[in-house]
Image 1 (cartoon, rainbow, N blue to C red):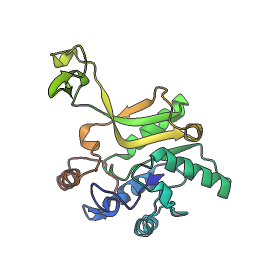
Image 2: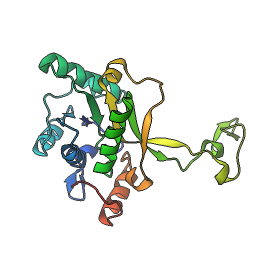
Image 3: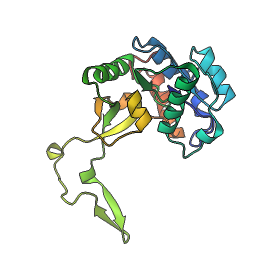
Image 4: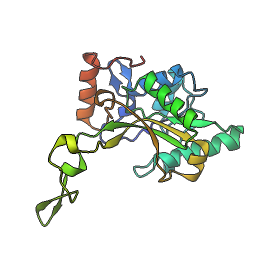
Length: 226
């Protein structure tokens, strides 16, 4: 499932804005179509233009998402739950798992996607996510209190080699079991795949889009499915 609402704020119409000559959403559709573990590629959108571009790229858009599920505060899990419910009630279709690919992550590779699905299958877990090693460790972060900086962690470690690695979700790949979607995301530990920084660009601002253009123009990332 590729979620792509029309009302993006940081970069207007970003899901169909052209990146290196192609609508951004096409990168996610292409990689999903190339994945041997995927039977159906469905785009969830509230926007006719996005729907038309998605269909032309080979994805299904069986219906337009209702406006109530295309708001700024709508969670991705709500969209997944709506999709799962409608597939079951209207088609009697219940997938073994759902792969979620956000269109704002054009640099994931087919190996990344396959790795996540294979990890899901071998562990029989509820959820696999993609992460990137964080450049900003909590031990070196601060919060503001009374106009002063206070260490986020009580014990501040000064040497990088003494820090325990920490990871951030990069938004590129999610694999969910059907049960996980019905019940919502739990706080149980997730399995994960690690991706490098250059493949973890998540386009949310104009700067992110310009950075993605630069990376694409210079061929910095190999294995992007076109």
